[in-house]
Image (cartoon, rainbow over all chains, first blue to last red; front, side, top):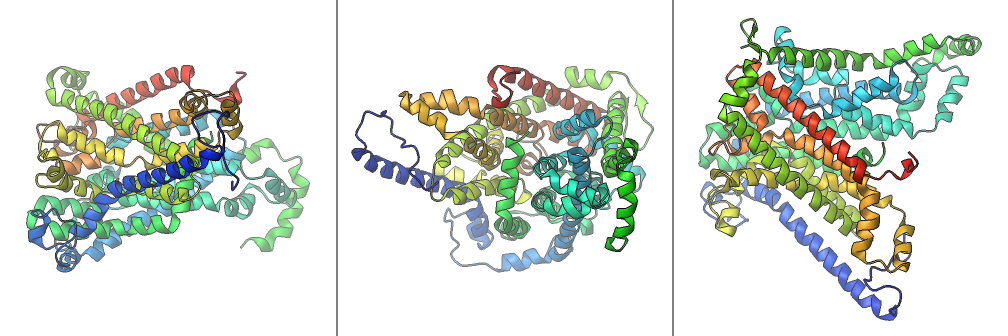
Length: 299
Length: 311
């Protein structure tokens, strides 16, 4: 990697290499300048969010200045009071409970299904695998209404069960696929050795395969957390008591209820809602980026 | 935990393993699969069948479904201008957002490909909006920036986009384009797998960079381009959160952000026409299926699988 890679000169081999050095350096500089400029534009909405969350009410709309004239921390204290007499801590707890339950469910159920698809032999394995892959493309809306009816009949509407229970049944095929891809890359010899030592499929799954699959499981856990945290549609449909709201739902009712004077507190709450994702991203970006990359190139 | 009974288990299985009937191992597979099988049956297949049935009924969630034959469909196609509005909005959005997003993803991936320093940083930084952008928080920021008096208004003097039909849709599309990081990361991984010798050989032959791009990069990357195209198209058909945020759930102005899923939500969960919403869901399913099938069919002529060259 450290050796000089292909020289990106337009002219072919005939030119002297002595003069080629300067244009390359210049080109590299231009590339970085371009990337940084693009990044600045892309990060602007996030900078705007952070700045606005600290702006006094009269500057939110009137001024084009990104930076506030002074930091209005009261936006955050107002936001902490929450919406509809439900404090932000409660909303945060609700969001965490749902996301945590979803993470546990997805990691457990998807890794079980993935092991069967990746390593075990059973009848209809091919067709079932094809079906599983096809459900990645299935629009959520095709199953949405009957699922709602089922949960309604079970008396589970306005509880967290409809948001958590499906994750324990490996309904997110994307993650099954992700883990299958990873497990296929593990050396089979280890399981064969385990089998010779007397491990049945269950023990070799829990003691041999699962520990080795940890990177894929971490990726699954982080993506599940972030996607569940960001989810709006399902929460909108299943939850309607304000004290059961998640941060996402509370933000929505913030919008409906308030005038522009509440802009500051609203965006302070937006920052609070975004914070866990940002922290997850900073802590686990390697897994996230590689998890995304791996989803597309094999298979 | 189970290590204490290991010797016993070992002794037992060692004698049995060679002769153990296949069926027993198959039984283990079904135990592993059981959560998935239950989920697929109860939360996927059954609901699909039920929603197909409901699409031929009038159903308000409280009274028993009432069979109406094809009426939901005929009403949808012939008597409901808002339905066609939502179809037009969604198709326009897909056609604008997906190519722009994938094009940008490819350009940035190509720019980063040979970078020696800073590649990891840029890769992560460009990817971040893909995770944040799906949130209500960012959708609200978008609404404010593109509103009257928002930044875009100040910079371009175009007035508030989200208040003007036509422009509001573009604002939502830009939010999607902004999230080009996820396909970019996949492109970048695909680019890294193209053997460098191909480019070296082409350079010796005097091929221009554009020629190399067309004759090496595009064919070698075509499976990944195809993967991204299918995935992003399917996702774009189902966009909801930004549409909801930009118009506070109403699909305005003048129904210009009445996306298909927003109208489906409105019919099913606001107006309690579950039968009608089910019919809409089935049409969406068929359209996504058809679009995917067409993509797969055309892929035969342009997607190149190096490992399956002798197919």
